[in-house]
Length: 315
Image 1: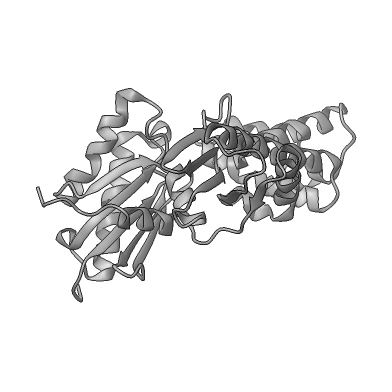
Image 2: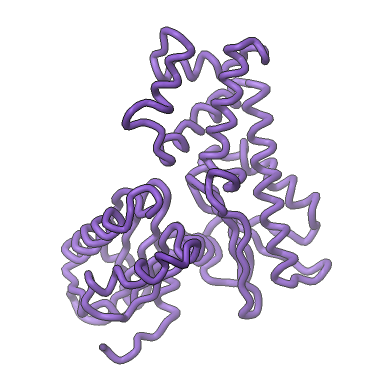
């Protein structure tokens, strides 16, 4: 290393995990992107393997060693959501780094720390899953993020599932066929509509992240004026705004007080398809909401969050 402390930020997600090393001035030294560390999907061994490779690669690219890392923050999906494995997740980095100058938390922290640069306010994550997190005067709160089976409203997975449902109803004649039907058929090269089932339920298919990617087909259909796809995006934006409003109340923002809100996650790559109904939902819930464009990406947020924590004596 060229000299001086460096900080490691790790942003885990349902689709990918990003690693970054920054110097004491928050300048990026190296970045690496690998697959998911979502334990319900890849298991503890899978998460451990991704972390080990990512740390090795980012250290190699930067010329740093584990000893150079003053502090690291690991934002891991599902962290804190199963008390049976949280301790095991917390222990993973020690075996790789060889020291305890790190902290682990839910990846929601990375989105907030990046989007708002660790300032008071609320961040809404809509990636493979969805969750909201915020801080105000040292108080913190989360909402949403209960998983794709019965929550994750407004996420890419949620959008995709509703798009697939609309496709099935169009195929049956329960809905008029809109552009979504042809877009799905073309994407999968379907000769028969029912062959879609093999792509969703067949061997090696149906992973959470793979389903979430299908939200791009729903976005394409919405841009072509598909009524059902547009409805799905309107509802997604409203759901995400409801998460933000729950956090506003939980954090104790006063009536009329300005409430900074930002966003992160791949579902927002749909642009105004999602941002417009999200913005409308925020303004309908509380005039004090101020929607702000993200300042940094979540993996940079993880590094910024690491920089807030002075390193203890080496153990």
